Image 1: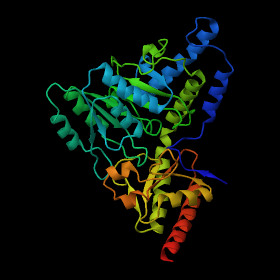
Image 2 (image 1 turned 60 degrees about the horizontal axis):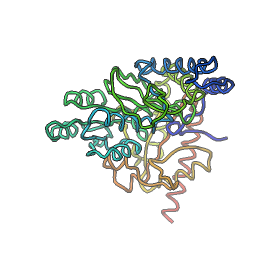
Image 3 (image 1 turned 120 degrees about the vertical axis):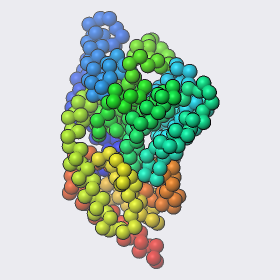
Length: 379
């Protein structure tokens, strides 16, 4: 038996999404075509757009479908900066790699904003960065709603207010948060917000950027004027249909968040009973109900990943580079975690299908791996 505990990487495809995808695949039509088949495809796109817009508390005309969270973040960062005359980009130190890379690619001045030891954005540091900007500067802040590694929820509303008072704009990466907690663009007050399907049981390769009403954005992909001229290219109708179906199912499951948090906390307590020196990251600040990131000194993340995979459990380390090797997480280092301990951090992320029996089995297998590692070290 294999147990999947890596929902923050990709959640298993939901039955609702699979059925929506298959139904769309059985139909033929380009949503840009004017004939009946094209109009049918466009109707499916429009309905999916309304579903996702409603979940995000945005206008359906302000939802731009993309190939995933990375493209949505790139469109938000680069599109906002280019269309609104931004001069500086402020980036939270624990942001996803795609956001850091997009900011760097803008050619603008980029400054990282520190986080505190709990992993939340340091609002005092943000205020100092804003204050230090030259007269006439127009900053863009890029900030995630919830961290993909620790689950720590960021102070997005306070940060957004600070930027808007300074005449700046805000892009929010909600890829990890959407479907796991309420995410409402109107309440956050940001100018754009990125989401992705495969984090909530939708298909891989589809995401969206939600824009605040009236927000100007420059397209990254130029083409035939699809997505209201904001993103060229024929839309992925089956993927979008699956995305919308997954959104409906995920929103309906939000009421189970407390139950998932209880499972996570049970596992956390069991692990702490096996290792008194365990470090739980984000334990003292608000975090996603499904996420547990922890480390034990001298128990390398790579060792843990291999041992758990052999035992039948799918988990993640803090960060994996493209070569497939494990390295110290940049998120951990930004939280001032020593390099040696950061190299031992792993993440377990749960979903609605996760059971207590599975978590107890994981704890048992992890405890055995820890005993073996310490025995080898002692030898």
